[in-house]
Image (tube, rainbow, N blue to C red; front, side, top):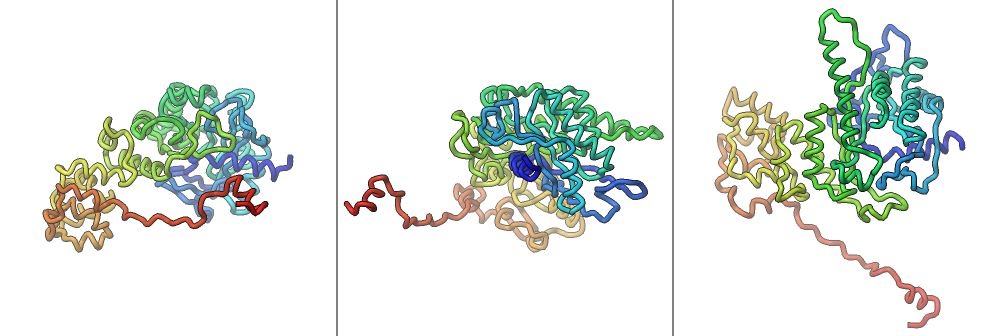
Length: 428
């Protein structure tokens, strides 16, 4: 199989992995030394993505052959897809060629499991080692690690990568047992704990005065969870994400809506979840990380799924109307952060501006605050929401998207076999 065909197969197989952002990666500078691919000081534009946005990466699998039989994965052992496999030298050459043509800024490398987890991990590390040590590559490298690999190999991968990640795939062990029997939640979390320990250890070494520079290690880790492949609720997903953020200091948890694959397993759902569910999970994730919300406030035992019609913050505000309205000239930052329509940046601007004057609605307009969403929940110098009926049942209706006219289909139902026969014979 030629290299072009391998690239087509293995790049297409890698498209299902969402955890490839580079937020928070440390810059490397090649000024005054040898090397290529520097993301700083060499005129190369590097797209940082604190919000999870991807930069241009060569995103491929080392191989799509796999010993595991995860039902949701197109590369599973029982899948009837064409298999391909790169050698480490081929991935290295592709990365350098694409980089020198300015097609990419780094590499995202994952792999199916071949022979054993340790053997696969050694091949993945060999790619990164060759790029870093033999070709002095200073670009971004994200390696997907395998939780079943030995801790020594995962630690070695961290020395060459800017970011390493392990996909937790599903939020519960019951889901994994059903859909990915070779995977184990506790084992994955143990590997994450080991990576977290190494990252913290290196940061502690860097803080020591006059201590020698510690060896490089990845600046963070991330993971990915499938949405809609099993019966897990949004509460299950958010509780697992919150545990990963607090317990292992993950940079990001990515939510990937399950998408039907060719020749799917019969235990999978027929239809994918609505795309807006993935969007709502990202919004709830944002509330957990930057707005001091708790999982129990966003989803409840009685309503374990997010409201798909409204964003999670607005939905929470409508369920807790007793906490509003909030006076934008007096309320503390924690209260203002919970007002629908006020983001963290605008809250800081409001806190700074109200030191000098009492804020009016026109001041919020200058900050481009969405007034329709904010007005029922705030008090300003020239505004009280009494006339907006904060306690009324119709308040939720104001925020729902307007009804849309359903499209009329003139095509009619698809023809039956009898219809086709009638066309050929003319009989009615």
